[in-house]
Amino acid sequence: MKNNQIVDILFEEIESTQTHAIQQYSKLYSEQITTIRALFQTNGKGQHSSKWESQSKRNLLFTIIYPFFKNFQYINTIPLIVAHSILQVYKNKYDLNGSIKWFNDIFFFDKKQAGILVQSEITGQDIVIFIGVGINIDWNIENGINLEKILNKNINVEELYEQLKYTIIQNLIQLNEQGFKYFQKNINQQLYKKGEQCIFVNLELKKVCEGILQEINSEGMLIIRETNGLNRVVDINLKMQI
Image (cartoon, rainbow, N blue to C red):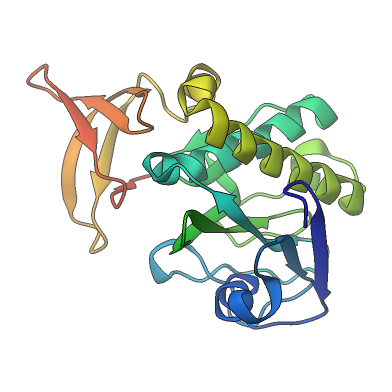
């Protein structure tokens, strides 16, 4: 299997594309780039054990398995690369500008439009990357927003899906070869609430730190400036309070 060939799998219904991809990788999908898509998930996975909800079969729910990643130092930047890839497609296809909310969400009008979950496992010399993506096309939960509402028109979902797959995989290859610095400037331009005061909380929603968003640094970490004037690196397990 060449490193740029993609095997497509479609399920009418499944518990979770992410769970299926991880559990069945060695048996069904090893040594190939695979995209696993479902029209409906009974237990969709989100970040930190949260659940991704979708009641529309037009919403995009898929996992990309990329088994050829080699640079472990860039693992934590992959959610940013995937978010950037989605915004690239939106810009090129719809002339639409959204934002990357630290560190794995797409936001429009202060509402979540897409979410990303990245997991990985090491196999020999390579790292297998499992990229779960949920995109609201025509339905969203109460505090979210969907793409067709933003655009005020119907879209071709299959066409969008093909472009998303291609762009995400090409940018993963680029990350592997060129490193995060190649993307850093553009991602900083897309950063949600850059230059604004933000609060970050832990999994129990307790405040951990607060400061003005400065940038994503060359290692893919979020830097804030605290009230004492010092810069601080925000832990990737902290959540920005909205």
